[in-house]
Length: 187
Image 1 (cartoon, rainbow, N blue to C red):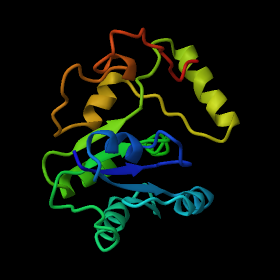
Image 2: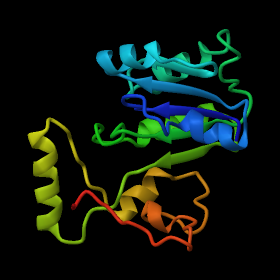
Image 3: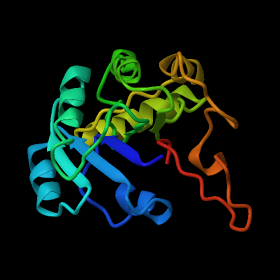
């Protein structure tokens, strides 16, 4: 994968996708999208070659696609005729009651071979824990919409979910030389 679009990027960090992607593909192009005015201004001030930041409506597939297309003229940007890795991060899907139209709209508009990554986790099995976690998020003006495994599977309808499937990030191709640290919304 040589091109990535990060939807809901949040503030820039030292381990952002473009840094990680360039470890294996030095020419990787990355577009970061966020709807926060301050986040976008801060991110644009730190723009690096082939890491572009745009402010756009994260709930609107057409707006996202327009922002992606608009990057072609700048530094080569994202070529939507080639595979594009979609990374849903920083609570971007949590803000939506039903994220399926967003995911489906983007997947339908992009060529086969894309990758969808998110850090959504399934609802804790204990309803009280899920409610408590959502309450903590709400106190910080964040929205947490815990979703069941079935809801997450439905969200990825039409995509091939590779092994090991929908699992906590620590179980995805784990590094067995270091024990995993498991975190969840239930922390």
